[in-house]
Length: 433
Image 1 (cartoon, one colour):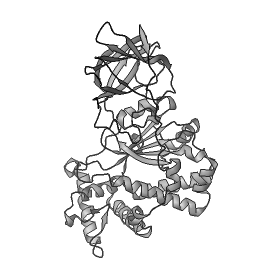
Image 2 (image 1 turned 180 degrees about the vertical axis):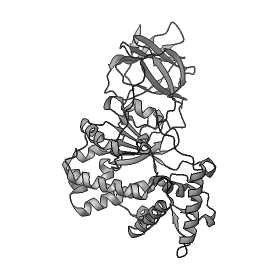
Image 3 (image 1 turned 60 degrees about the vertical axis):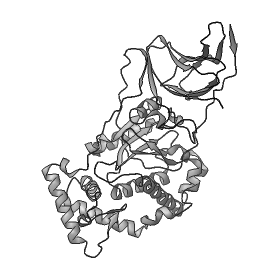
Image 4 (image 1 turned 45 degrees about the horizontal axis):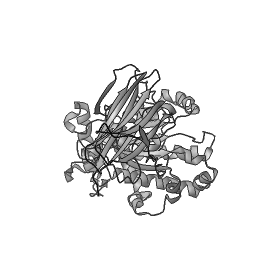
């Protein structure tokens, strides 16, 4: 006999992000994972780390002889050229080797790599960056309030979490500019476009504060560009402003993007990329990743832990979450073979406790139910969540159950498709009051 209770299942929508747009006009196709593979009900650590781009180590000992020579020449030229301004620095790091800062070589190598270790070109780029920052008062941009209030209100871009390699993540959301009012407020006049650009630099400078410029530290950011419902290239103001932003960012923030992942890419962007791709260096291409709408979550999980991905993209990260954090609640993985059913058993050995769990199935398209099964065989099974079909548009599940007797919560995933399914979940038990 079963007794049905009201489900505690709630889907908390993540709060829209903060502010916008730094697109690189290219993508690299991601192959789908092989559908074959064994089924296992034994939990294992979730999602193996994967990289398509290996960030260089900024230790001089890892450079080849030509690169070491270029670094030495740039160090010498900086000392010779810095007679007027002995305290010159970038992002809080002294640029003169004589200051003996551990971050100096890290910054200099960024400029050298951006100019293929051509010393004079790297030095000129560095000088231009210092000049631009002074003329544009970039060092004071973090103190300016209200620059992106409107953009933050509609969620145009934001910093949130870190990837599997420790890079801070910046999300850029183009879809907000599909709203005519938002578009006009952001790009309607030259003054508004300049304000937008300044706000964009402010956002990047905030992200840079999260970096570690010591040798071996994380010295770049992961960019995610969401093109869902994005205005097409016919929007001149957006296109021109974006092009200018990209130019300024490339010229003055070299090697600050570890990887750029484009998600929800529309068909028009494919054509755009195919034209530009021949002009991109292999180095640039190696940093770019492309995900179609149907593979957004799967692609992001290759680079970002599930607990750091916002639920709007199929992850487990909820805004202002007081229950779970990246350090609280290990994410486990289960593979459900095509045409099979698997269960997850969550023990509740103590009476009067509350069990809380999160669960996602990549691609969903499964039947799912939740039950509490008492240890005492004479007691009733309680339906926590009726069996239901979970479609591709369903969001991650969060639910809870408080027990009055010993037992276990059993989550059942039935996969009737011809493809294996990957389940990610986490849980914790809270004691009685």
